[in-house]
Length: 503
Ligand SMILES: Cc1ncc(COP(=O)(O)O)c(C=O)c1O
Image 1 (tube, rainbow, N blue to C red):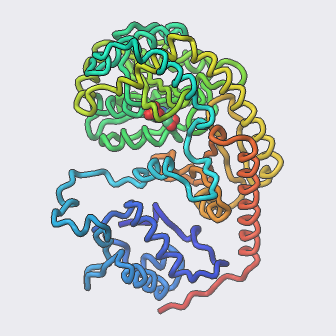
Image 2 (cartoon, helix red, strand yellow):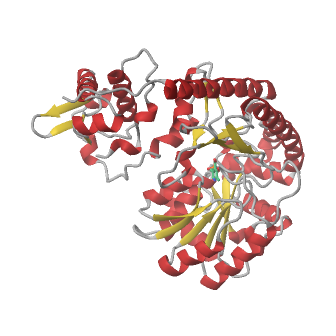
Image 3 (cartoon, protein in one colour):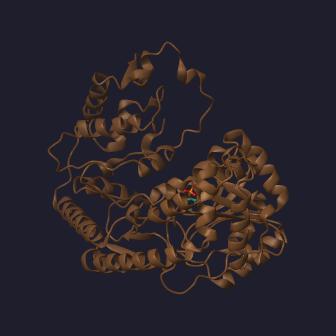
């Protein structure tokens, strides 16, 4: 297997006291533990491993020996080195689980999303997950709504309900969308267990293996994973300041993609907003080609300045835009309540598919969100979180400018959750991430948001999860990391080239 996609020489620290063979063994062990290199994977021969890391063959052999001692790899004489079966409780089972599993597309991204939402090590400030601040979750309001209304609810409302969702919530969402210029009736709405589920359902009902989908590059990791797991081939549309409609048209003519997935407002991860003109031009082009557009819109309510232009769905004159929304970013992610707006024929087909996974979305969450919307609590809550997040964005922007501007370029987002940063110096964001871990700060490296290999100069920082004091501390830690890397780069330039023995 070509492991150069997952690790390379840049990740070794030649100034570190830890010998190189150990550093290589640790890198490989990490990928094995994350199942990026699953059991049974054939690892490169020693000579190739040595070339990959620009080390001697002895170093490569020692790295494999170390992994072998740890039981992570095994060597078959005359054949090569393989990743061993997992050495955990499951290996005690007599059932050969791995042989029973259906084919799973091996994708290094698969574990990234899980890692992002997993709890960071103690003392580490994580700017990785795209999460609202738990201190701002409107839990008091939810408690009041619950206590006040639980006695009045018909018990049947907590039994099974239609797969399409709790009708009062579908109605409330249709009203909310209509107020934003997106004409919708109850029958156009499917409630979801998070908008991630909407992406999954769309992939199930629209995509066959080998189908093409167009996605911005970079884009939301969860969408990449779902479409790739469906066997789709991704056509990348660079997410630069202005979307290239010429390139999109070229894709439409050459490949007839099944859909375009796009985040027009406060894009994840870049924060970009499509202008009103771009939106109109895109709709015109899509209408001509009858292109299905999946518009993912989790962030548009979180604007810190001018209102963004209307959603693509509001301009949809040909019935081809499918709109995804969620309460995860504006209320809290554990609600697992999102929604999809589309034509009834699509809602019906998606509901048939949804019943296979969860019958319907959790009633209690849907009931609570309905009251939250119907009692006008959302507008109040949005005003409060917008004010707070705007302060955090400005504080962090100033701190980044003050302490990191020599090493980083970044854009100040008009809304949403993220700073998208670009390294000015030599080195990759993966390298910065590794060093940053030593200074107890984490974020998501840019490569995670791409389907194709990139220069890996970019990374995403979420500024909404922590208060201003923690954000300031996080920027200090980042600045320290960047200074350390710049110093190491300079020292390395000054060192004479090493000569490797040929054996
Ligand atoms: C662009 C985008 N779409 C969808 C989601 C998933 O949201 P949910 O929690 O509703 O599944 C996210 C979450 O990060 C996101 O950024």
